[in-house]
Image (cartoon, rainbow, N blue to C red; front, side, top):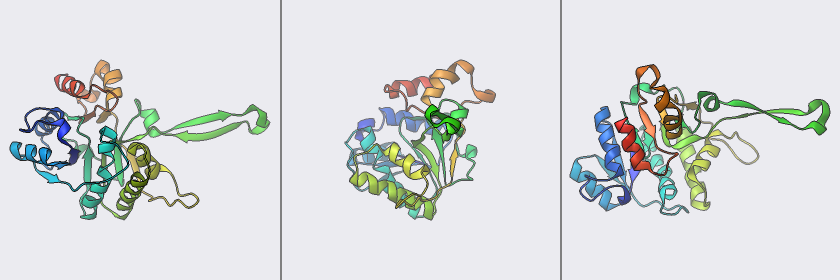
Length: 254
């Protein structure tokens, strides 16, 4: 398991900040096979100070700004390096809270197994959408399918030629396009081959919403319903709320 961060999320001594809340939750959950991808010397030194394994990553250039989305865009090149060494990776953003060990919950039957941005299981698994064009008469109804976005901040990816190619394709686009990395991630992962585009043909699994939970599902539904089967989610990603650190702390308290 790995995550990447820069100095904006933790103090120099490693004892204060959103990243520290994330790391503390991992320790409590029992996750041991983790290292942090440090994007600057400040973060690397903080990890050294608190004894967290880290990789001081090389600089990665994309067209993104130095904000949350811009930092996120750097991870595909770095994931490419790890996957090329033969390691499977559970990639997490730093605005995630671990409540229990996520590894026993992975099904591992697909190239990419990731959190959905949907707030219910029906939308996550895919739904049929009907377009009505009355002017077409007998053939007025056109059927298509829609799934909610796979979140690019929490997914498990196997090391193989298909996923290496996927990371290459995403990184190549982010180098030449000023685009949201999650949109590019979904386009390259889901869209079939067409025209001159050749899909990497990765298999995809939508992770169980009650186990790998987005914050809309947690704050809109789960906190009122109670945990499914008496179990809290393994990971909660605070992706829908801007007050990320406060939400992370409230998930821990809850």
